[in-house]
Length: 464
Image 1 (cartoon, one colour):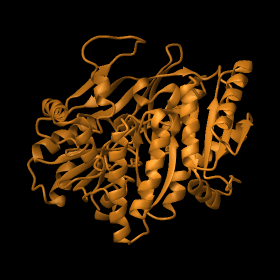
Image 2 (spheres, one colour; image 1 turned 180 degrees about the vertical axis):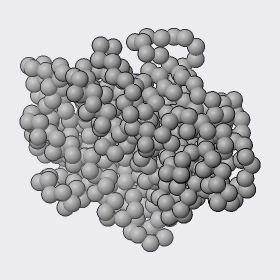
Image 3 (cartoon, one colour; image 1 turned 90 degrees about the vertical axis):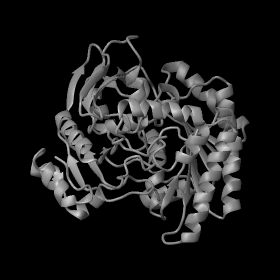
Image 4 (cartoon, one colour; image 1 turned 45 degrees about the horizontal axis):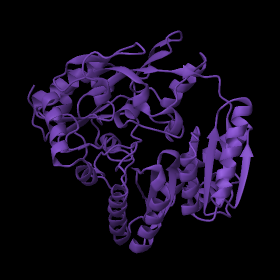
């Protein structure tokens, strides 16, 4: 039914005819909690209402209502995004998928799982591990982020340098389209070449082409790997970057290769007391997972490459608890820095050979704009996360941080990189994405958007 798009009470009254009262959040304070993700300084508005969907049918009903009422729809998982992709817009409804937490099917023989969009990444990983299977994509937020959100941004993670990102594991999905139709895309088989790859198109589309309600994922065997960690301490970020480039040039494919700078290490240790080293400008964390003597040989070669690149010291660890402790420091770096002030998070990705130069440019940008930049990185695939920190309430520092953010994006592109490796474009990366794609390719995006969402109601203004 048509409603006044500015009247939240009328919107809520109309939605109560579509969903149960306990699925509808109309209180302003509750709506504010769902208005934005974790991106600092990305614009957002209070949504007119929030619907806690429990099925694809719920999502479809809300989308049909929004289309008739002239409202937009923003889909949301756990709200852990860092680009503003789940931020509410003026005259919008937020559809949260957080209650859609069922694992619908787990086929051990075919190594396939079907999970609703609200399933937490770590819950899925544990469920399939109980059957001897493994879902590799492991974003740093894996304990709190949802599978649907991971699909929306094509999330990566620590092990993606060897095992790939979310898109590499998505076989199919159920999607609610902009007219409220529910369609099933993709396949369950190991191979398939029927039609355009619409499944891959949806992955990373940030809710602008459809709302994913469940996903069919392929799995790997859990066994057959034996983790060994190699930890190099370096006198500078650039030296750690040289080691990254050397490991790549040598043809070694580690199962993880992560940089954590001194500021991140100190922030994590002051928060969690993990006993981390404080006497190096950067630590390079590598793991290899080949079993037996082969794994030992690869670990030794990585250690030599780190030493040759100028590491102050190199240590190896094979005990699972010690490896977990070291990588916990990497995963906790972002929340540890958030305790120091608002963090503007970059997500650039450059060729591996350009990692040393990009790290040097980040250092120069921090000095030129008088801002504090801490750096963590999925260095093995060139995905760097400079974290720009500005004191709360310091508007001048905030302005400098934004200038530094834009300069880092420009430097990344100048080195042959891309403006987002895994967080998505959202709102924060729109200018950089436009420059990277070019007008003709942006036009192709618009054509696809217009074909699938002619009224432009699905997360408008995001991603391109």
